[in-house]
Length: 127
Image 1 (cartoon, rainbow, N blue to C red):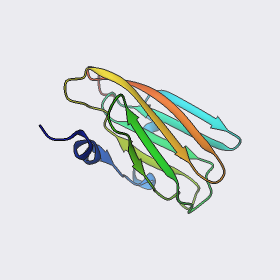
Image 2: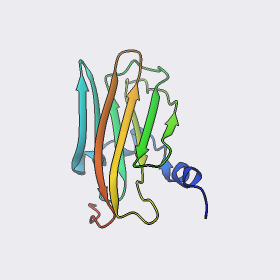
Image 3: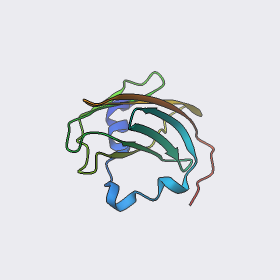
């Protein structure tokens, strides 16, 4: 049986904010955190989760950690965009699991934000 980390890494898509910014606005907001001018939002189509952070320092290197139950967390070091925002997509599917909780942490020089969102394999997809 393949290890979960390579599979999870393949399911983590790095799509640009410019190309997909409005998609998450149509999806239900499942998790949110805010501190000062910083915001972290997790929206979902029922299959994919969109992770958006704003209020970050433009161009700064961040720490992004995505945890899904007892799976080894995915740790990345992306850069905030020129607008001080970060956006990533995550597919929370796990073999032999019908659902769970995804925990997301985004840490930068200005703020550290953590939010959680539930997922269920049987949710309908929202166009």
